[in-house]
Structure formats: C-alpha cells, structure tokens
Length: 434
Image 1: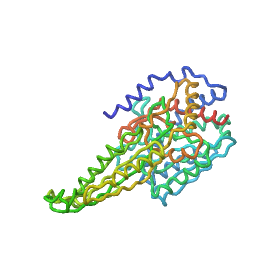
Image 2: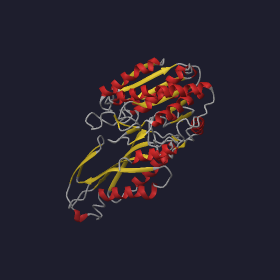
Image 3: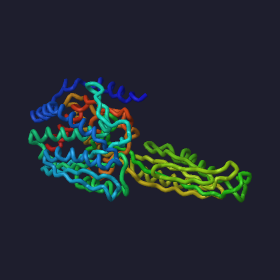
Image 4: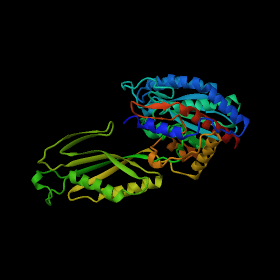
C-alpha cells in the first residue's frame, strides 16, 4: 500500500515532543537562530514549491540547469561564490558548487538537484495535500534538503555567525543516475572533501526524525558471462558436450547463495538472468533479447546484479569469494565475472559517531528528543560516500523528511522543516564555536 511510508512517519512524529515544547537552547544566539528559522518557514516553503515545480529529471539537462539558476542567487545572497561545473565530459547537465570562506572548521554540505521524474512522468507539480503534507517530484528527495540548508545558513548569517565556518556546498545534477565516467562525475565532490573537515549530507535518508546516517553500504555492479558447447539437447551431460551454459550459470548463482552469503551487511542480487542459443545483452538500460529452442543445448548465459558491502575490505573479500565460485566450472563450460564500482561504502567510524553525538545533543536541547544511527542495512548508497573517507566526520539524513521517494506518491512532511532546519542551524553554530 503506497501510503504506508506516510503513515509510518506520522506515527514517528506523534511520538516526538511537541515542537519546541521542551526546548532549551544553550545561549541567546541559539534562541535567536530558532526564532529566525521559525519566522522564515513560509518563505522557505514557498521557494521549495517553486523549485519542485521545475522538472529536473536527471536527463532533463535544461531543467537541472534551471534549478541551479534558481539556487544561485540564494547562495550568492549568503556570501557564497557560485560556479557551475559543466557536465558534458560525463554526459550530464552538471553540478552547482558554492564556496564561502570562514575562520573555523571546513564543512562540506552535499545534495542534489536532479530527481527520478523525467518530463514524461505523471508526477510533475507541487500539491498541498493538507496543512502538513505536500506531494511533488523531489519534495523530500531531495530539493527539500537544499531548502533546509539554505534556511539554516540564512539564520546563521542573520546572527552574524556564518563566518565562524568555512563552507563548501556541492549539489550534483546526476545523483539519481550518475554520469560516466564516474571518476569525472564525482571529481569535484572528492576534491572538495579532501579540503574539508566535516561532511554533511542533505538527503532524507530513512525519513525518520529519530535517526541519522553514520554508515552507508556500497553499490557495485557485477556481470557473469558463461560459454559452453552447443549441441542437440539429447547429448547434454555427455563427455563431449558437457553441462551447457544454463546449468553452469545456475551452479554459479547457487554457489553465491551457498558459499558467499552470510556476512553481515553483505548482499548480492541478480537483477537479470538470461540463457539461450543467442543472447543480446545491454547493460544500459538493463535488458536482454533471447532466441533459442528446447532441443538445443544453450551455449551462452549471462547474469547481471549488484553487490553491497559496508567496508572496502568486505567488498574486496566478497569479490574474491565470488571469483572463486565462478572459476570452479562444470564440464566443457567457462565463465568470467566483471565488477563495476558505482558508489563506495561509507564505513562507520568513531568520527561519524562523534558528529552524531553532537547532533543528538542539539536535538535534545531543542526539545526534539534523541537521534540514533540508522542500521546500515537500511541505508542505500548516496553521494556522501564519496566524501566520507576524506573527512574527519560525516553524517547524512539531515534534510527535509517525507516518504514515497521515487514513486508517484513522493511527499514531504512539512512539520519536519522546523525539526531539521533548527537542528542543522544549531549544529553548524556549535561546530563553529569549536
């Protein structure tokens, strides 16, 4: 049932303290930040509606650039220098990068302007369902997160506190469908991370205001290709013909399940399986065209899937195990496996947990209750993973929350605007004080 994510969020919100009911900011400046965030909400939500109503499906390059054009003056008004990275070398619209000098820690804020909703998708416009819920493409994933960051920094600037941090903002135009080659598409983010101390992701993550993300699993593609002797089906299993490609691929997949499966946070899923006399395979978009006969031993087989791990070591170990399974061939067959790295893992670190502890303290002081870490099993790949290894601390899931991401029912719960924006503003303030 599509509305279950919304119902689940409503239950979580109902269990939180009333907004500000037990708030106890540490000083007058924090109180002023909270007041500014509260006063600025109507204008922020109005701007969010404007941005959501611009179609910025990843492959709608003009739409992605238009979102960047809308955001540019907002960052410039906060004192940022804004540049646009042309995405032509990696086949996408490009990225917006905003930089602002400051005295203290260097904080990297990470988000994306694109959505999964291309111009031919039925979900195109912002719609207020009621006082709290707004549907729209990217309302929560994750244009809402960009608006949260802008509002938090606007509150800091109004209190003359923004200069206490050096801030870089990287907003990708291809998070939902990364450009290629990936090393070019994520070059600017990685370089920004190398110069930063702290990385903060503006995703909606698990859409739970009681959690934030300290670790994310990787996303690696794999393809198994099998070759075998072809013959009349009556000769299968003979010494001269052997097992055929279909049985060899079945052995490999069963071997993955029996011999590789089991380590915590390691998963591998075959998304496409094909075997026949002739197989025409396409990686993008993932598809296969088959032709064959029941009385012919299949000479080719292919399987394409993904692999997810929590650490680089897990990734290397799992690859080695999968290669070992692939190499133990049935008679008269051969097989190979190829891996394609997409998103690296964001491994759990003490630094990440320290940043979560600071965020948790902010939340408690603001009256929003404790924040705990998301189980990495429930945290998919995201752009912060490219930055996490290069900074002392990283935390994700600090954007506007909602549900139904990547579906026609995507929505933002606007009650989380105050929760997330107040938290981010005060967290940045406290990081600046340190």
